[in-house]
Image (tube, rainbow, N blue to C red):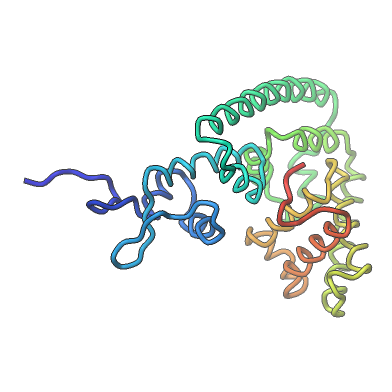
Length: 272
């Protein structure tokens, strides 16, 4: 007779990294990274040296995910979890308080978005035909839906929708022209071998931030996270690489260097 078991759990051992990834909803790559930096190390190894996680390891990962959802940088999360004066119950109590506060804040944001929707109703935002005329084949209507799903609950999204909704067709045309000029200048700087940590690159990084700030207030910390997304999202990378090979990495490096010069640690950047 055979008995059932937990998928990914070897007899007498913990859960494999793949099983934990499926259980908590993060990638195996993320768990490997957290193990390497000591944030969420696997407490065991199989005879063939594969990572295995016990119940306490998984509980720690769940606490990490809550703190990350609340916007804490990984370095701070590790410090919180490794504080010898704070036990697991205290962490859960604190996280509950933070989550309740966030729920209240999100409810206020929903009301604010509703008010903005009412205000935008009197404006005439760009139609799909207008976007096609201004942006040509570069515009994809699905991007709007994707952005709404990804950032729709943030204050920046509400702010961008308000500003974009009040822009005229001529203003959108100027936005496109300015973006093309900026991209041309970025590519030229990379092609000329401009040091991404130089003052010339910093000026370009500030122009890049200003182009974002046209739609919502963009801090240096937010810009770092956006530049990091350029590295990770092939669609953004293709756009910059089509202008100049290596431009994606050059821009991200320039943004991080400029952020550092303005007192922001890129490794601890948050959406604030």
